[in-house]
Amino acid sequence: MKIKDELNTQLTQLGHISSLPNSPQEAKLERVPAPFEDYQYTVRFTAPEFTSLCPITSQPDFAHLIIDYIPNKWIVESKSLKLFLGSFRNHGAFHEACTVEIGTTLVKLLHPHWLRIGGYWFPRGGMPIDVFWQTNTPPKKVWIPPQEVPPYRGR
Image (tube, rainbow, N blue to C red; front, side, top):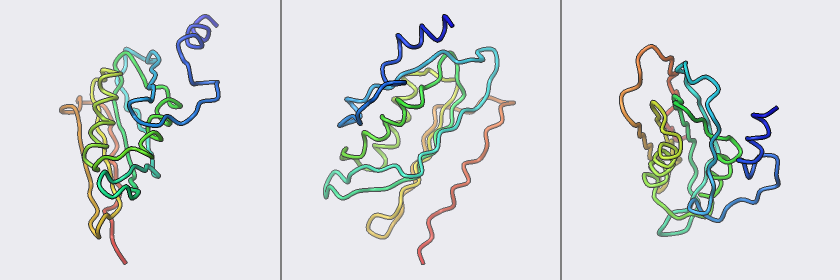
């Protein structure tokens, strides 16, 4: 019960009504202690309906994001991650900037053993753009499933 009480005082969004932040800079990513510090395991978040705005035309862009990481001392609180990702909805940035910003922001918050993000962007101007970023070589002996998002194929 003590852990739950501690987390309730640290977490500002979980268990509360939270509005979608206006921008990634306004979003508050939160973390909680990793439940198994002595083990290495992979955590995956998938956001198949990620949206942002083109910084030039303000037209919407759509992506399927996959974030894999091997926790160290912290894991990301999932509601805060959902709100953070949702804050890009009105944010103007190129695909590369959005994808890498999400990855680097998570690394600064969590200090994981390893993190990778795959941004599978739907076509803009008839051409899909896929963006991949990772921190370093993944640790050995940890199962990291392939992302297996098929490349975009027009009709």
